[in-house]
Image (cartoon, rainbow, N blue to C red; front, side, top):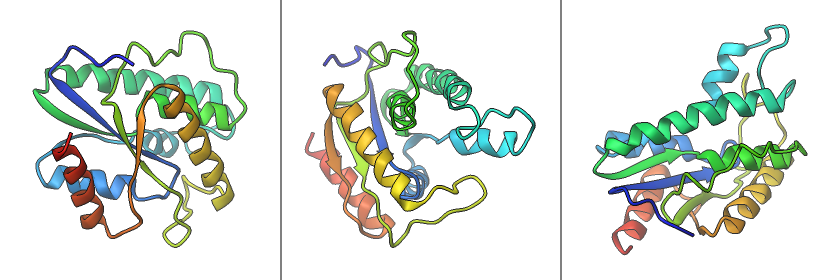
Length: 183
């Protein structure tokens, strides 16, 4: 697994829906860290129930293509950052969701040219905090399936998965920063 020649350390926060990633990412941003936010919910909110909309339930491939393009743009934006950048999901998440949805992945969707920091923080499914809403209506069992797909995708990509403990947001942030301080 190769690491980018850039001086940007790209740190991924990944996990199934409703595992606390975005709350941790928001807290990291408040603490002054550079964060590239999750974009999937924005697209789902924008598309809503439009006829032929681009969402993961009616057209996973079209949705994934839109997300891929936006995440590659986030990746390019971070080239200018001297230091660490946290990503609330990465390009590999797009591949994982397609895999979990039994969608064939187009050959042009290759994450190898977009390396991230070798330690990836994965948020495990946590039924106690799992919530559904307008953009997230899947049952908890789907979150478990997505988690398994994420583990498979990142592991096969050569990344070291670090499980974030099921604790309050500030303790999770502290855990992540502690692990990174030892890296």
